[in-house]
Length: 79
Image (cartoon, rainbow, N blue to C red; front, side, top):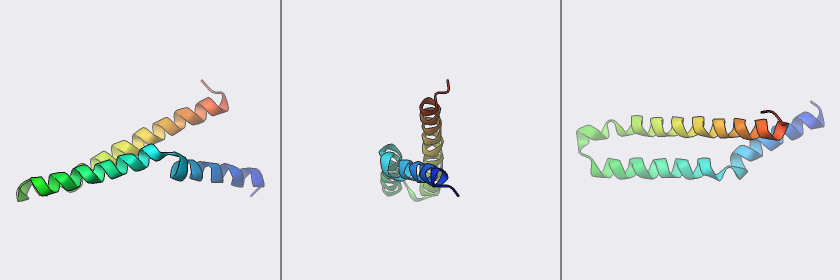
């Protein structure tokens, strides 16, 4: 691999892990919401909390990928 490729990979990984605090905040918020619901709801309803957490996390990841795609398109000069 060339140094340009490695720099591109490093920029992408650091952008996901360091610069994108919105995803991290969303994950913590999703965990807090599902924890709160699991303590407040009756036992039969608690079975659905895992599915709720999964749905919230999938939505967060899809929204984050869309935002990253738009940002990359803008940075590359695309429309």
